[in-house]
Length: 190
Image (cartoon, rainbow, N blue to C red; front, side, top):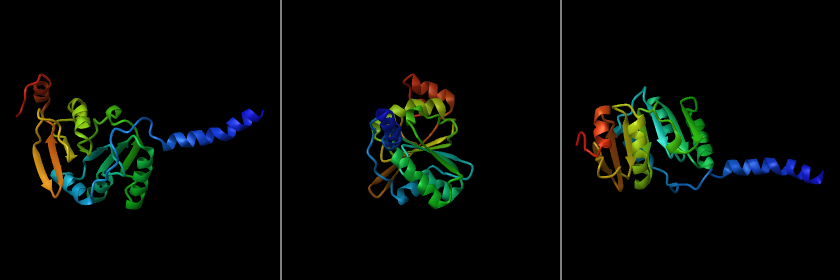
């Protein structure tokens, strides 16, 4: 009886703790992107009304700035539930909670086919690991913009901009037939 009562009392605590901790070890540490870099990333990617912006590894929610400035819809994904709560609170404060969604999840398991712009601030090894997913799911003309880190020498950026100490990389997704060349190890358009 006491054990059953104790489990009933402790179970909500265990559930609450589970919602605070990431589902698995985080791949990167949280370092926020400055508002200036976020704004330049959106400018370089030519974000406009009608775009759907995905922020993979969203932290406190870069897509909020795009929604607020351009009226875009967006999705942020992060493994860390604390960051997702923070992003949702930031969206509410910015008045764009109806335009953006945030979910706790693995960016490699997230369906990104709806995205016209993908924003990243991940380590190089994660960008490279993400590359096949970008090629498989993004439509031709979709833009991928990364703060500080490239995709490897086999996929050079379409544009690179230096902003103070930050680097901003832009890739425009090629037509499907060029992606096949890329997968075969040919440079395709390069």
